[in-house]
Amino acid sequence: MDLARLNHPAKERARNPGTRPRAHGVFRVPALKLPADILTFLRAGLRDPRRVGAVAPSGRALARLITSEIAVSSGPVIELGAGTGVFTRALLDRGVPERELVLIEADPHFARLLQSRFPAAQVLAMGAGQLCRVDPFDGDAAGSVVSGLPLLSMPRREIMRILRGSFRRLRSGGAFYQFTYGPLCPVPGAILKRLGLRAQRIGWVASNLPPAAVYRIERARRPPARAHRV
Ligand SMILES: C[S@@+](CC[C@H](N)C(=O)[O-])C[C@H]1O[C@@H](n2cnc3c(N)ncnc32)[C@H](O)[C@@H]1O
Image (cartoon, rainbow, N blue to C red; front, side):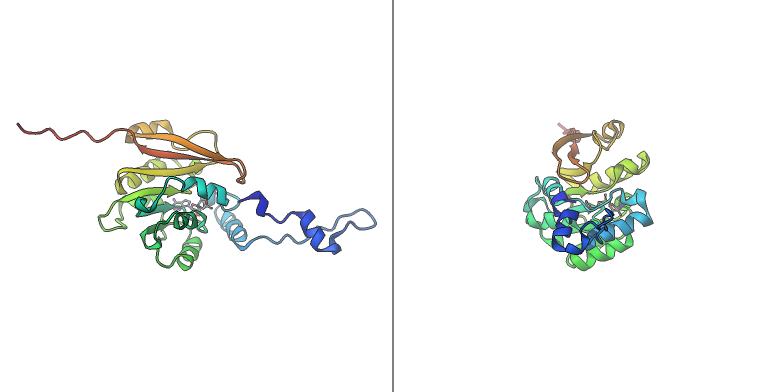
């Protein structure tokens, strides 16, 4: 969420003089008008705080950063934990056609919202760990995976399953983008090593609430070349 887009109480007071301090010194708190997506997020967070893992949707600056290396040629793209679709919109802004998007979302309310907002995209209401078992592009490999998943609140085994499934769907040279509120890459080093991956931080957004960093995760080495018969 961008801090600048919040309704500041001072701005509310300026618009509504009824919220001035009363004579006895008690401030009347104005009813805070929150954008609909923040309310949707708060409700989802109350239903399952660990799964949502955030207090509000990501802001536009973070959406721009996490999609900054994606181009039309990166399609098809898989988005994990799409929520209300902040990153999805940024992917469309980067030129990825809507029909080349697969949005994977475990919360059925978010999944319905996403399908109504992006009717040409394929929305799969399921856990991202199931990616090993589905082939969303009928054998075609994805160019990128963009993840808004709360990896820090997931067990290691689940992270491993998600990364393994994602790289099974990614073509050679494809990358997995993940944001985090933590100081380090949210994929433990042991998992990166085991799967032959490497992670690099590509930037940090101080204005996001909370501030967040983005990592690019890619294959560390090419698969060994097949031996040629002489
Ligand atoms: C931190 S929110 C990010 C939402 C959105 N990408 C954004 O940045 O505003 C995490 C999202 O991941 C979804 N999620 C959590 N665990 C998931 C899983 N195992 N598979 C798919 N989606 C999951 C949540 O329902 C939520 O929409």
